[in-house]
Each structure stands twice: as structure tokens, then as C-alpha cells.
Length: 362
Image 1 (tube, rainbow, N blue to C red):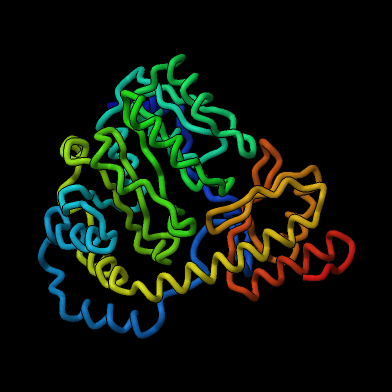
Image 2: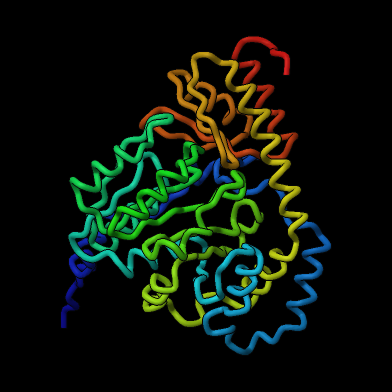
């Protein structure tokens, strides 16, 4: 009997035909310095790794983890030190996971979702995956206004709005007054992605109890330097979290990840020192890059710098030739440079001075 060929592409959901799988840039090329992913330049100190190792040795791995990671959720509440309880937190496999939970909970076929542009690409991915229609507000430097966002709300009536603050890739803060006015007047779900908020000393988490539609996402990947364990969380009102819990899978965080998260949350001094060092390096590099009057260097409240300019790709090429990887954006022409270790930042600065055509005083 002749075997019939099954056309798999005809069986997938129609939404998936609009989606391409996520790919890293320059998959094949190896770089000595990677300043493209907004990761922390600091690995955990060896003494903390030893503490983690000792805990792993003691921990039985033949049993399931805590069903909904209550110990970790309560540790996050203690760390935030706000008027929250453990049931106002959902943890996920990176903040991507909790962003996905939000669209799974609230977005259905045909719903409109609004965001800024450029911004984090996964907002569009999760919207399309849920069958929603994704629209954005083109963003130029210092142009985010309540009036502009409100106009789009009145036009589209979106079910959800994603705002990244500080924004990735531009590094700009969205004024807290704008966020709170939106939370007050908007009737949909307002998601504030605070992946980089630790570098800005600004957060709207304390307002979730006053606005039931306000959802705030955070991550352990950036300031905490734990991108390798993939851990993020969502903070919201009791009413919002109750609904998102409907899509939460049991045992979604493994025992080791939960344990590492709880350990790092007790290391406040380490975290604060590292954030301070990154901010100091960021400000130094911002001042130096601003010497090039042909570039539009965006003010940054994150752990990276975003630069636009006609000759910016030539600088990116120079960095690549010196085995330094950065993030390149084609529309508009721009680059994003993660703040790295001081010695790596110095190399970038030295190359910039060569590119600019001479040494400048620091």
C-alpha cells in the first residue's frame, strides 16, 4: 500500500503561518566580546555558586517542585518591600513566559494590541500567536505623550497595550505620569515591561493595587545577572492575577531555578553594587558617544545605549572586525550596545575614537 504524504503545513493553526521562528543574529560567527544581548557583564561570584552547589547536593531531585512556586513568590514580595502579598506574583520561565500568559489570558482572535516602535519584538509575536492584530506607535526621541497614545486608543480600541520602560532598544523612560493616566482612563490591560527598571530606580509596581488593569513584568536576566536560569515574574492586582492564574501550568518553574532565585534575592548589596557600576559605565559611554555630532545618541535609563546615524553601520562594521558583537537595526538605521565589563567598554570607546578620526579627552 502506497504511503500517503501528510502535508504538515496544512495542519498548523492559521496564526502560525504569519510567524517566523526567533533567530539570533550572526549564528555562525563567533565573537570574543558579545555586547548584543543586554546581559549583565557579571557572572555570579564563586562563593555564591558554591552556596548554590551545596544546596543542590542537599535537594532531592526525584520529586516535583512546589506546585506554584510559593516560596519564590514570597521571596520576591519581601525583596520588593511593597504593600503586596504572595498571591499577587506569578513567576515564569523568563519574563517572556509571563508576557505570553497575559496574551493567552486576554487576547482572542481579532483583538487589537498596541505598542510603541521600535520595541521588544516578542509583544508582536505573542499577539499574532493569540490571533490578535498588532499595531504600533512610531517612536522618535522624547515623543511619547499621553495625547498620542490616547488618540490610538480612541481609534483602535485595543484590548491590551504593551509599554516597555525603560524601552528596549532605545533606553528611554516612559513618564510615570503618562502610565498612571493611562491606567486610570484606559479600559483594557496595560502591561508595563520593567525588564530594565533596576537601572532607572523607577517602577510603577507600587500602583498595581490602585489599578486592577495594570500588569508589571520583571526579570532576573538583566540586573541580577541570571539570564542563564530564565526567570521572570508578573506583578498585578489580586483581580488580574486571579485571571492569569487560569493559564498557569503546574510546576512551571523547576526546583533549581526557584532555589537560585531565592538565594540571589538575599544578596541586595551585590545587586546594588553591580547596578551602580553598570550605570557609571553607561553614563561615561553616553558622554563619549555624544561627541559625534552626526549621531543621535538616545538618553538611556537601561544597561545599553541606542544610537542612530547615517554612518552608524560603518562603526558597527569596525566593532565586528574587532570581534565585538552588537545589535544592529536596519529600520531605522541604528545600533544598540550593551554596557559590558569596563575593559570591554574601553575597547569600544577606543575604537570609537579611531573611527571619529582622533583621540578625545575623556
